[in-house]
Image (tube, rainbow, N blue to C red):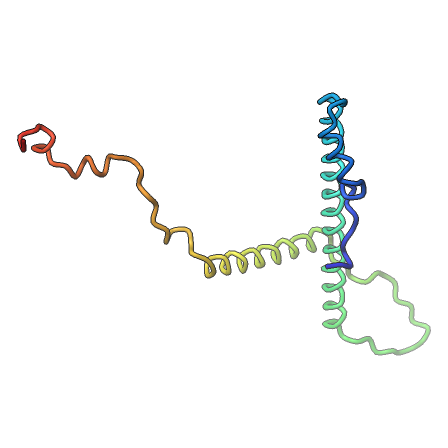
Length: 151
């Protein structure tokens, strides 16, 4: 989705910069490896940060959906006397309960993906493997042929 796209640090610098560093004979291999390592580290950190951000957004979405569901199921309050003060907080779901629901959703999604993968494609067990060893052919030859009596 374009709205979630973010610039990854490895792609902010010009790739030609690394290409020239690799092809430059004046630089030592240590310097080239250091540049490659830094670019790779930036990429790893950016992916880690993006995945954390995605999980946080997913957590907030799940929490808001569950909160809306609870609000819809709760009976509407009828207004009575204006001086009655109610103290307390709205019931909120704990983070553990939300994470448990998210895990259940993820497992359900994974089972759907697995069944779709099983239905599509060749399948893993339907393929006949080529036997490359000679044992199958040698077992089919009788003992008489091996001893040379047939000559």
